[in-house]
Length: 222
Image 1 (cartoon, one colour):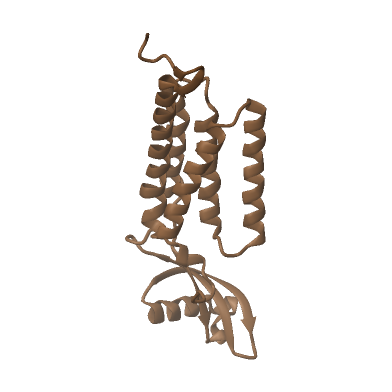
Image 2 (tube, rainbow, N blue to C red):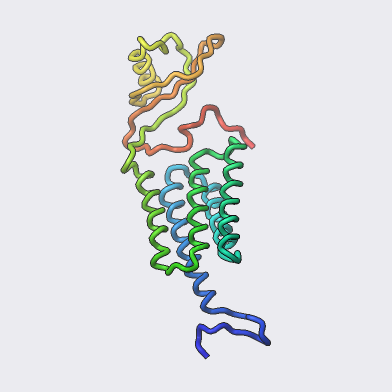
């Protein structure tokens, strides 16, 4: 009897060593790729442990769900259904930032590929995983697009928000924030409270950006 032959007891399959090894190798490849993307590209910028574990657990769940489904059509349908569900969640809630939802789609797609590619060898399967990692690295490392940090500010001196006084506005923001402000966008203006919502862009060699950039108001304590 070959070591890799399935083991049965009274005709009931007990252990399929070949199938088990394939599952373990594919699972290890998936968790390595997903873990690398989350740990080295997503987490350093956001520092969100809750999403860190969410991404890992969802990836594991998607991989196992797709891997054990019978039939390619059923797997494709399930994958499309998952994407639709996450899309509905994204557009019906404000609690999940768009960056986190993008990573969620990204990792779900990777887990679906790893779970569905039964006819591919491990070496062939490594190629899409490496492509996913490379794409995440390129865009998070600003190799293709230079990242300019930004912040929202509730500004109280609305006499400076007119276009002809933009230089004075930038100078005032530099003095009050201590940041090297290079550009300003004027948003909502409240003449009753003499305030305006500004989005400032500034230069900082050490700051790589964070999820705080797009916050307009302070988060509520749960």
